[in-house]
Length: 231
Length: 231
Image (tube, rainbow over all chains, first blue to last red; front, side, top):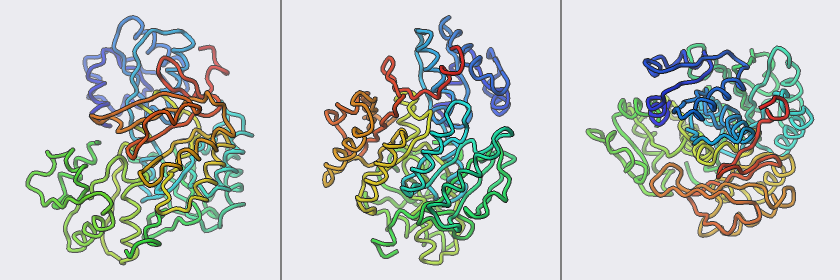
């Protein structure tokens, strides 16, 4: 968490968030009005935060990772626009899963990359597949969000097949679950073997491009210095 | 800066970095051996950091933004591998330009996006163009790093033309320069008009997908809740 996020929490009169995330920041909750909710209630959470802000309260809506990357910030704006809400909104950047996972793996995101969510809850699978094909063909490093849930076990199988049509089986793949948390798991594997590892809802997967290499347990996409300079 | 980055700086015996970035963190430099260098000397900086680490020193190599996204982490690994350096390396994630710029603009990265650098210093322009075309055609939000330098004024003109072949002229475009710094500039414009704004080496540009909208000065790519839930 950045100091800017801490300051926003300290300045808030009300803190709204998913219980699991609020449990990580007990020191910021003391003396505040706290509204916790369960998973999948993000629409309710957001509505509550906007309602309280419209009443004139300073509200902090807590998001895991970076609220601006596949997270709560968008819903706040979608809903505020729908409701014509007259509230001031500020988004405070955080460390997204892609930042944290990349750091834990080494340096896989040194070159152009595409972030793609495999969740078809709000996006047609055909669109997701089209993006996977485009990213695979244009040699982007691919960051996969929401690779698997109980209801969608086959999406990651399809995604891997699309990547394999354009990349070598030995392409490095990093699988990071619960990055920087107590239950963190990091696996460095290959496109060929990636499905042998545990992948769940807390997992982010980074698939290398044609130049990505594994070195001493790290996954590295070279920027290309070695071709230009004597290292 | 995150607490983890602060702890790494506090634990380091030597701090190596680009002078402009070190100027931002004077409180971490007191009592340390400090090795500052100028822009474009990243290979020298990296070599120095690895040499000192090989001597047994604990070295912090400072990077702007997130060292793991188009930044110093990759060069460290490229060089350590070349040299067969026997040093322990840890990457600490930070707020990358894409996180900071997205937050300042609203919520443009709520859906699949591609990050593409327009610098052809280490990458052939043909590859960059191929990626722009793939990202444009597959309706990715596009984050453009290194849009322009004195020597490459025409790349952003070409990039815009590629995007315009697939997206409406009124597609929202966010142009953020020096995000969160004193000289920060934020412009919300459109694909049609984006070249009218100042773009320089400190600028990051975010080009919306087919659903991105502008609302009250913010740029928002909806996740798609409004189609599924009553907001």
